[in-house]
Image (tube, one colour):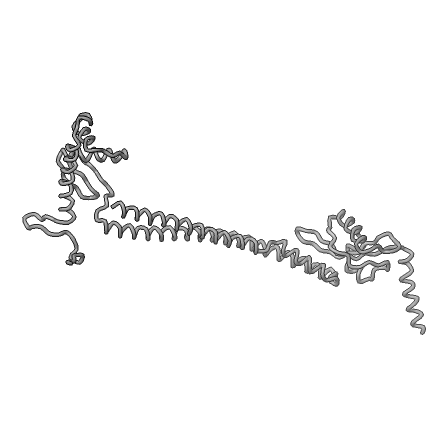
Length: 234
Length: 97
């Protein structure tokens, strides 16, 4: 079990790495595209400079009509560059949208892959506890959606273990016995705690196995609760 | 022969006043930015001989800057009177600066 859980978190870690690298790549590509766009789109002065050069280079361009024409040319160039500026705005908005969509697509893709791997992992490892609810009044513990009836003593043991897990603590047999019986840990025997654990395992394990593997259908008999296709004899 | 004499006389009559005026006529191009405006103009320097192009450009740039224009280049330098063509092309900028 520890091995498989390590591999799941490993795939998650690689997933995070892929996401980070992918997002960086997307942002970099689109940033480069934006910069190129900014640098290559001519502004109004580019048109003016071009017209000015034509005017300077041609000594014969001196008549008022020709000069007027050149001025009009420069003005239309400036008007065109205004249009380009608005286009640039639109293109940038589209680029931002494209970035967001690409990033979202990448995240979903990696999430899908990770979830698939996780699903396979869960299928292999059998039971994965995603919720554990201990109900003292009903004397029942709910694992995921399955409820298991326990005796009072087992409930106590399970509760003590759950509390210790919440505090990230480990309990020895003597400590378990001490917490349940209310005596000091030094006065308790390790074996007493071990017995409690054994009873809990037996009681809970039996019920889990009967729920997941060997089903007992009342008045009819026993049957394996698995798909026919997965059975193989060697 | 008679025609040649008449032509010479005409040329002399055209050339002499300019010598008498002792002026140097500079044909130039100038611009204003935002919005771009261009013009061709002629201005005169009070000198019997024309200075070099660089010197003439410096003087012309100074005078144009006072009027809010930027000199682009100097096209012609001449002590002769400007031709009617030049005068017509310069229009309102003929001897304005």
